[in-house]
Image (cartoon, rainbow, N blue to C red; front, side, top):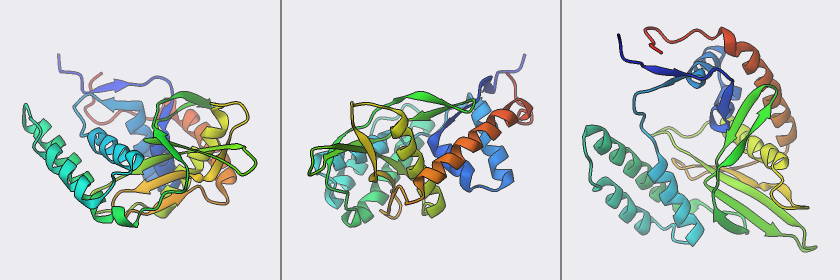
Amino acid sequence: MADKTHVLMPDPEIDIRYLADYMAGSERKKRTIVSGCKYRPIARMLQHKDARLTIASALRKGEATKENLKERATFIRSKLATGDFDALKNETNADYVEQFSEVVASVELPKADILPGKVFPAIPINGVRVTFSPSLILRRLTKTNKLRRGALMLRYAKSKPLDPEIGDFQSSAIFGLLGVHQDEEGSEPERALCLTLDAVTGKLYPAPTNAVSNFANMKAACQTIAERWPNIPPPPNAVF
Protein backbone atom coordinates (compact mmCIF):
# COMPACT_ATOMS: atom_id res chain seq x y z
CA MET A 1 0.00 0.00 0.00
CA ALA A 2 1.31 3.43 -0.95
CA ASP A 3 2.18 5.84 1.84
CA LYS A 4 -0.39 8.53 2.58
CA THR A 5 0.42 11.87 0.97
CA HIS A 6 -2.43 14.12 2.17
CA VAL A 7 -4.93 14.55 4.96
CA LEU A 8 -8.49 15.25 3.87
CA MET A 9 -10.24 18.07 5.72
CA PRO A 10 -13.90 17.08 5.40
CA ASP A 11 -15.23 20.40 6.67
CA PRO A 12 -14.35 23.79 5.11
CA GLU A 13 -11.59 25.65 6.97
CA ILE A 14 -9.29 28.48 5.91
CA ASP A 15 -6.82 30.83 7.60
CA ILE A 16 -7.31 34.54 7.00
CA ARG A 17 -3.94 34.69 5.21
CA TYR A 18 -5.24 32.32 2.55
CA LEU A 19 -8.64 33.99 2.55
CA ALA A 20 -6.94 37.31 1.72
CA ASP A 21 -4.98 35.58 -1.06
CA TYR A 22 -8.23 34.05 -2.30
CA MET A 23 -9.96 37.44 -2.51
CA ALA A 24 -7.20 38.90 -4.68
CA GLY A 25 -6.60 35.78 -6.78
CA SER A 26 -7.62 34.64 -10.24
CA GLU A 27 -10.17 31.84 -10.55
CA ARG A 28 -7.33 29.38 -11.06
CA LYS A 29 -5.54 30.67 -7.96
CA LYS A 30 -8.76 30.42 -5.96
CA ARG A 31 -9.17 26.77 -6.89
CA THR A 32 -5.56 26.09 -5.91
CA ILE A 33 -6.01 27.78 -2.52
CA VAL A 34 -9.21 25.88 -1.70
CA SER A 35 -7.63 22.60 -2.84
CA GLY A 36 -4.62 23.23 -0.58
CA CYS A 37 -6.90 23.90 2.38
CA LYS A 38 -9.03 20.80 1.77
CA TYR A 39 -6.14 18.43 1.04
CA ARG A 40 -3.33 19.12 3.51
CA PRO A 41 0.03 17.64 2.47
CA ILE A 42 1.56 15.24 5.00
CA ALA A 43 5.08 16.05 3.80
CA ARG A 44 6.89 18.46 6.09
CA MET A 45 6.33 22.02 4.97
CA LEU A 46 8.73 24.89 5.43
CA GLN A 47 7.39 27.12 8.21
CA HIS A 48 8.31 30.67 9.19
CA LYS A 49 7.42 30.27 12.85
CA ASP A 50 10.90 31.11 14.19
CA ALA A 51 11.12 34.24 12.07
CA ARG A 52 7.66 35.50 13.02
CA LEU A 53 8.30 34.91 16.72
CA THR A 54 11.69 36.62 16.51
CA ILE A 55 10.35 39.72 14.73
CA ALA A 56 7.23 39.96 16.89
CA SER A 57 9.29 39.72 20.08
CA ALA A 58 11.70 42.40 18.88
CA LEU A 59 8.84 44.76 17.96
CA ARG A 60 7.10 44.18 21.28
CA LYS A 61 10.23 44.78 23.35
CA GLY A 62 11.41 47.80 21.37
CA GLU A 63 14.48 45.87 20.18
CA ALA A 64 13.71 45.82 16.46
CA THR A 65 16.92 47.35 15.16
CA LYS A 66 18.93 46.31 12.13
CA GLU A 67 21.83 45.14 14.29
CA ASN A 68 19.72 43.11 16.72
CA LEU A 69 17.75 41.43 13.95
CA LYS A 70 20.88 40.53 11.98
CA GLU A 71 22.29 38.98 15.15
CA ARG A 72 19.10 36.94 15.58
CA ALA A 73 19.24 35.87 11.93
CA THR A 74 22.78 34.60 12.47
CA PHE A 75 21.63 32.66 15.54
CA ILE A 76 18.76 31.02 13.65
CA ARG A 77 21.03 30.12 10.73
CA SER A 78 23.51 28.43 13.08
CA LYS A 79 20.92 26.41 15.03
CA LEU A 80 21.54 22.67 15.26
CA ALA A 81 19.93 20.88 12.32
CA THR A 82 19.18 17.16 12.41
CA GLY A 83 18.97 16.89 8.63
CA ASP A 84 18.75 18.74 5.32
CA PHE A 85 15.14 19.81 5.96
CA ASP A 86 15.98 21.42 9.32
CA ALA A 87 18.98 23.16 7.78
CA LEU A 88 16.80 24.55 4.99
CA LYS A 89 14.16 25.64 7.51
CA ASN A 90 16.79 27.49 9.55
CA GLU A 91 18.15 29.14 6.42
CA THR A 92 14.67 30.21 5.27
CA ASN A 93 13.78 31.69 8.67
CA ALA A 94 17.14 33.46 8.90
CA ASP A 95 16.59 34.97 5.43
CA TYR A 96 13.18 36.22 6.58
CA VAL A 97 14.61 37.98 9.65
CA GLU A 98 17.60 39.31 7.70
CA GLN A 99 15.33 40.76 5.02
CA PHE A 100 13.21 42.51 7.63
CA SER A 101 16.34 43.91 9.28
CA GLU A 102 17.03 45.84 6.07
CA VAL A 103 13.68 47.66 6.18
CA VAL A 104 12.88 47.80 9.91
CA ALA A 105 14.06 51.40 10.23
CA SER A 106 11.13 52.51 8.07
CA VAL A 107 8.52 50.72 10.20
CA GLU A 108 6.55 53.00 12.51
CA LEU A 109 3.86 51.24 14.50
CA PRO A 110 0.93 53.30 15.84
CA LYS A 111 1.12 54.45 19.44
CA ALA A 112 -0.39 51.61 21.44
CA ASP A 113 0.41 48.95 23.99
CA ILE A 114 1.96 45.99 22.18
CA LEU A 115 1.13 42.57 23.62
CA PRO A 116 2.07 39.02 22.56
CA GLY A 117 0.02 37.44 19.82
CA LYS A 118 -2.51 34.68 20.38
CA VAL A 119 -4.44 31.95 18.63
CA PHE A 120 -8.11 32.92 18.48
CA PRO A 121 -10.82 30.26 18.39
CA ALA A 122 -11.91 29.52 14.84
CA ILE A 123 -14.97 31.51 13.82
CA PRO A 124 -17.68 29.88 11.65
CA ILE A 125 -18.56 32.17 8.76
CA ASN A 126 -21.15 31.00 6.23
CA GLY A 127 -20.15 27.37 6.58
CA VAL A 128 -16.37 27.89 6.80
CA ARG A 129 -14.20 27.80 9.94
CA VAL A 130 -11.92 30.85 9.68
CA THR A 131 -8.70 30.68 11.72
CA PHE A 132 -6.80 33.70 12.99
CA SER A 133 -3.50 33.86 14.90
CA PRO A 134 -1.91 37.33 14.84
CA SER A 135 1.71 37.83 15.87
CA LEU A 136 0.92 40.82 18.09
CA ILE A 137 -2.10 42.34 19.85
CA LEU A 138 -2.38 46.14 20.06
CA ARG A 139 -4.44 48.13 22.56
CA ARG A 140 -4.84 51.79 23.39
CA LEU A 141 -7.10 54.01 25.47
CA THR A 142 -8.72 57.01 23.85
CA LYS A 143 -8.79 60.40 25.51
CA THR A 144 -12.23 59.47 26.79
CA ASN A 145 -10.89 56.21 28.29
CA LYS A 146 -12.47 53.94 25.68
CA LEU A 147 -10.48 50.82 24.86
CA ARG A 148 -9.53 50.31 21.22
CA ARG A 149 -7.77 47.19 20.03
CA GLY A 150 -6.13 45.71 16.99
CA ALA A 151 -3.67 43.06 15.88
CA LEU A 152 -0.65 42.74 13.62
CA MET A 153 0.10 39.91 11.21
CA LEU A 154 3.36 39.42 9.33
CA ARG A 155 3.64 38.44 5.66
CA TYR A 156 6.76 37.32 3.83
CA ALA A 157 7.57 35.91 0.40
CA LYS A 158 11.25 35.93 -0.51
CA SER A 159 12.12 38.85 -2.82
CA LYS A 160 8.43 39.46 -3.52
CA PRO A 161 6.62 42.49 -2.07
CA LEU A 162 3.12 41.86 -0.77
CA ASP A 163 0.34 42.67 -3.21
CA PRO A 164 -1.36 45.79 -1.73
CA GLU A 165 -4.79 44.29 -2.47
CA ILE A 166 -3.92 41.24 -0.35
CA GLY A 167 -2.63 43.49 2.44
CA ASP A 168 -5.85 45.48 2.45
CA PHE A 169 -8.02 42.34 2.51
CA GLN A 170 -5.99 40.73 5.29
CA SER A 171 -6.17 43.84 7.48
CA SER A 172 -9.89 44.13 6.73
CA ALA A 173 -10.28 40.55 7.96
CA ILE A 174 -8.35 41.36 11.13
CA PHE A 175 -10.69 44.30 11.76
CA GLY A 176 -13.77 42.21 11.03
CA LEU A 177 -12.77 39.21 13.12
CA LEU A 178 -11.81 41.35 16.11
CA GLY A 179 -15.33 42.72 15.94
CA VAL A 180 -16.60 39.16 16.29
CA HIS A 181 -14.18 38.20 19.09
CA GLN A 182 -15.25 40.20 22.13
CA ASP A 183 -12.17 39.92 24.35
CA GLU A 184 -13.01 42.78 26.69
CA GLU A 185 -16.32 44.33 27.60
CA GLY A 186 -16.85 47.58 25.75
CA SER A 187 -13.68 47.39 23.65
CA GLU A 188 -13.85 47.99 19.92
CA PRO A 189 -11.46 47.28 17.06
CA GLU A 190 -9.80 50.28 15.44
CA ARG A 191 -8.83 50.26 11.79
CA ALA A 192 -5.48 51.98 12.42
CA LEU A 193 -4.50 49.19 14.84
CA CYS A 194 -5.45 46.32 12.49
CA LEU A 195 -2.24 45.83 10.54
CA THR A 196 -0.57 43.58 8.02
CA LEU A 197 3.20 44.09 7.89
CA ASP A 198 5.13 43.12 4.76
CA ALA A 199 8.52 41.91 5.99
CA VAL A 200 10.04 42.34 2.52
CA THR A 201 9.35 46.07 2.17
CA GLY A 202 8.51 47.13 5.73
CA LYS A 203 5.19 48.53 4.49
CA LEU A 204 2.28 48.52 6.92
CA TYR A 205 -1.22 47.95 5.65
CA PRO A 206 -3.80 49.27 8.15
CA ALA A 207 -7.39 48.23 7.63
CA PRO A 208 -8.64 50.53 4.84
CA THR A 209 -11.65 52.83 4.93
CA ASN A 210 -13.69 50.19 3.09
CA ALA A 211 -12.73 47.46 5.59
CA VAL A 212 -16.36 46.78 6.50
CA SER A 213 -17.39 46.17 2.89
CA ASN A 214 -14.21 44.16 2.27
CA PHE A 215 -15.05 41.91 5.20
CA ALA A 216 -18.62 41.55 3.97
CA ASN A 217 -17.24 40.38 0.62
CA MET A 218 -14.95 37.94 2.44
CA LYS A 219 -17.93 36.52 4.30
CA ALA A 220 -19.75 36.10 1.00
CA ALA A 221 -16.66 34.36 -0.40
CA CYS A 222 -16.79 31.94 2.54
CA GLN A 223 -20.22 30.83 1.37
CA THR A 224 -18.82 30.22 -2.10
CA ILE A 225 -15.92 28.24 -0.59
CA ALA A 226 -18.33 26.13 1.48
CA GLU A 227 -20.40 25.38 -1.62
CA ARG A 228 -17.30 24.59 -3.69
CA TRP A 229 -15.64 22.41 -1.03
CA PRO A 230 -17.37 19.05 -1.73
CA ASN A 231 -16.60 19.28 -5.44
CA ILE A 232 -12.89 20.11 -5.23
CA PRO A 233 -11.05 17.04 -6.61
CA PRO A 234 -7.92 15.71 -4.87
CA PRO A 235 -4.46 16.50 -6.27
CA PRO A 236 -3.11 14.04 -8.85
CA ASN A 237 -1.72 10.83 -7.27
CA ALA A 238 -2.87 11.87 -3.78
CA VAL A 239 -3.16 8.99 -1.30
CA PHE A 240 -5.36 9.27 1.79
